[in-house]
Length: 368
Image (tube, rainbow, N blue to C red):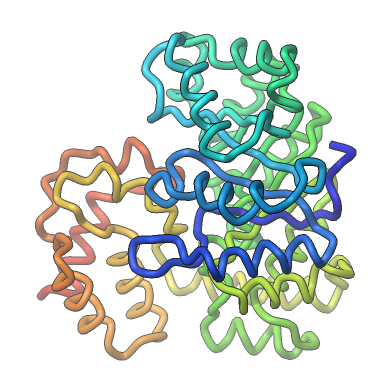
């Protein structure tokens, strides 16, 4: 961990895109800007961007910079293996896809109560720890989406875990369904450094309703995203805050607040509290647009996009939410009313959303 520079990391789940492909030219420029600003932590996983994130990093980062100049985290994703014998071949393929000989961090991906049991049956933690002993992995960690008691159990059973990646942002901090604060407290009790994911909640905290934006403006300026990132970075025990930047403009904005990081002051904390109050009053669907649900949907429904349309309507951010909804559906994707209620989306949703029920609401609001 001593090689990490700064508290700001480049999350590569939402890279810049041109249609269905990663915009490699812009991604290269973003990588160059990130490293040029003095940061060096990159985070990826095999499922990201329909398996295109790892090769994009090979093309834009690892083939262009010496290995000691960056820190690379990858993950063992549950959808990518069925039994213990699958793990090492998967790991080797990930190294090849990224163009490296070792990972600085290898995380057990999206751990939850059910996932953890399967990882245990497949001896996933034991395999990752063995890879560390062999020098193929520098640090073993986990990313987590569940209740605090489950996290406490995992860290108790596997004290060798060196870092925990948590969803932490000011909207989720005291949300009983996410249990962000409680999970953070578990990490503190176990002495595990925290890597923050979703500090801007999938972009939801980057574009705010009028009342929330006014509160932040009155506190002295700075973009909504910068407030969210600084909030997370200021928490005790946070080693790294990841931002899934999708454009050079987002990169420049994030670097502007993290290059010379300062924790939020008292006036800014008060503004955050007001922004939280305004956001919660809108009853938004707390989807972070990770898109895990889309890959497994038999009807091809672009679930996060449809949720975004409903959120825009509720938040008054778009007077044409219904037209936007129809445009998404017309692009060859399924409508909310075409959901067959198979439940695959709910099995994989990190936010544990009742997706099927919410799609019914989307259909009622935007198709009627």
